[in-house]
Amino acid sequence: MLTGQLFPYHPKPLPDELLSSWLVRTALGHGQKPHAFCQSVWPGKPIWPRDIDSFGSAELVADMALRTATPLANAVATTLSAYEGDLVRSFFALGRTKWVLHLGIFHRKRKHGGLQYCPQCLSSDTDPYFRRLWRVAFAVCCTRHSVILRDSCPDCGAPLALHRGTAAYACHECGCDLRAATVERASLPAMELQRQCETFLSQGWASWGNATFVRSFLFLDMLHQVMKMLATGPRSANFRNAVASHWGGDPIPPVFQNSSKEIEILDVLTRHRLLDLAARLLDQWPTRFVKACVEARMWHSWAMRDFHDPPYEYERVVKEHLYRPSYGCSDVEVRCAERYLASSGNDVTQRALQRLLGDSRLISKRLKRKK
Image (tube, rainbow, N blue to C red; front, top):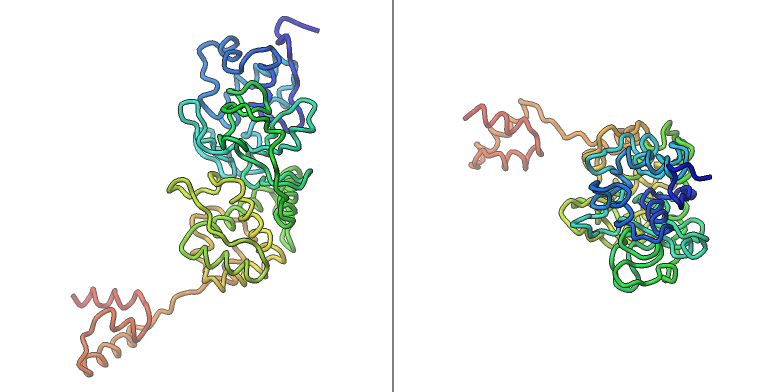
């Protein structure tokens, strides 16, 4: 029944649908392009020049709920910010949030493949739509169809921009039907790990091996750190090779599009390889993880690099197995080494002392005092 507040066509959000997908379906159902529809409904308000799934205003979400007779909680659940407390500890409305894929919006264009899709899901949908999970970086495959997701048009290679197309399943650049895109089989370890992550996300807590994480984002924080260790840093190649040599997987190095080296800008095939390696590495936690870290010389400082508020279970393992305190020689040992060098006709330099005693901060401190 129409009340005057409702859109003439007022669809409800489909299971796990994204806000942008819901809005596009609503616009196309009125026979209008999404940009024109939004300008007529919300004149003067910038809707599409931003990532509305991440940064859509509360007013827009509330208005969509009102005009489609949708409970407000269901409308809010179409946004990525609703993942706060489950996917991440805090969602950053004005910045980049861990695990949320970047769209790379620049003058209404998309530079990154931040919107993924499963061609077989779109093909089987009565009304094709895009899932919220497809914007999450650990989602690299469709666990329903056992295939790797796609993140661009199979014909022209353009990242998806739903609001510029004539149908939810059509590429806005060349009109290619995304439902007909070819797919690759997902690796079993990657798919099983992703399925576990989806379960953790829905239940709000996680269990891995003998470890329990009281909130799901704690386990996902650990997984994110492990994938970063596999992807970045001077020792990441050794780390990937250690995993691949013992338990399989593809150690090909990831190629980043810019200097930020964030997991969230990597293409889906690269993230699939990383998740596959992480799945093999985290199996039998923490035995394999410790073995690979030791072999790659990924000690405490590397495993904890840029990791703020690590979960207890991860921090405990790292401190117990990967902490290697540097040797601290005594002042007497330094004085004896100095006399030895002087008596043997050698210059008493920091390098010479380090060759005898190892790298110790006490050496440099003593030499500074002497100056």
